[in-house]
Length: 323
Image 1 (tube, rainbow, N blue to C red):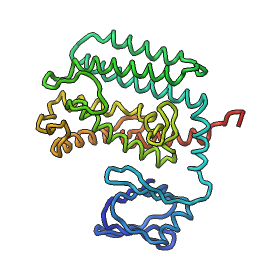
Image 2: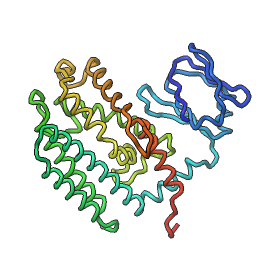
Image 3: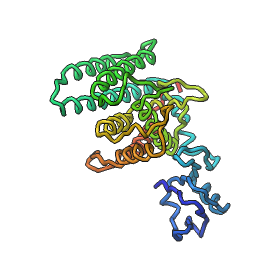
Image 4: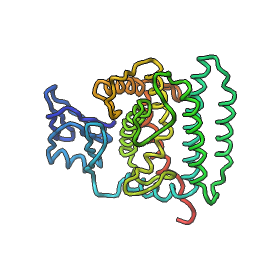
């Protein structure tokens, strides 16, 4: 399991072959073989014996900020599964494996956009055949896109862009008239709908990034989105399959009239009162359970599960012949 330490003043120490966690709430002992990783968010103290026990058992310690963004890691310098995973990640993501994977992720994103719009229209007893046909045409083009296409990445990004523009074009007609929404704007947005979208995507980014890092990935080594010193390429690739969590939460906030103009200042930034309402609804969405393979799982845990499944798949995938 992944152990989260969030209580300020927590002390982490060692007793024989157990981890000892002590704070104002009491003391807890955990066996080494029950822990996969430790994520420390609060201000804590760690003994060298504790750190040594972690390193001996190849259990990483992650340091995270208040929002869960990981900024540091303590781990063994021996060749472990994370090092092997990153080596595989570099090789596989550059080839056909990566192209097949990103096609699948983009189609999953498009499916969630279609599903959301169909849900909105059917509630109003409106005809949705045109929407189904449009999204299906985009999916068909992606499925037919050859892996050896010389402009594969640019073409796929183009199809993804068409889908997103169409999604927001239809969506804006169903947002309450009180709120003016003329289309998606990532940077410099001041209209409330875009501001809330951007805020929620920021929260989702931290959740997805943490899941990828804990699974052992380097978030800067991706497939489709640009790689640079500042771009978390894999994060922007992998998050595509979970963007629907923000799409649906944001629309729900406005359609249920939970958003008030007093939530924003003159620059369009969200005030504390607004953040509380928005975050409350989003975390409620993350805690929502869905059934997968006969088991119920929350969306928040599904993100972690998908990241770990991807890591396992990459680790066990057969390498190309030229390696």
